Length: 111
Image (tube, rainbow, N blue to C red; front, side):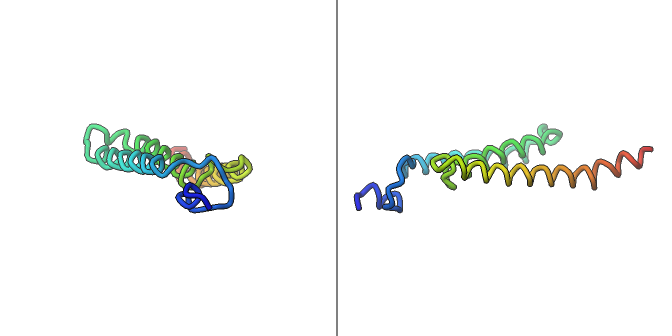
């Protein structure tokens, strides 16, 4: 087993994975995004747009973690498809529940 195989934690011949330094860079980016999330929370002028800003920043972190730490960027597109299908179903369910329990009762109360 070569040094590069042991450094990546596997010797089964999978290629294309990023270097350890690249993972450290992703970790630093995630740390910066988290710091921005905390800072945004404490800026009073941003309170009206707080939920969308935090959702966008969280989505960015989610994408980085999924692509690199879960290795979906380097694995077969089938795995990405399965993951995205589950994500789409979960997004649909959360949206449907939001409409059912939050938006529809508010509309009915106005009628």
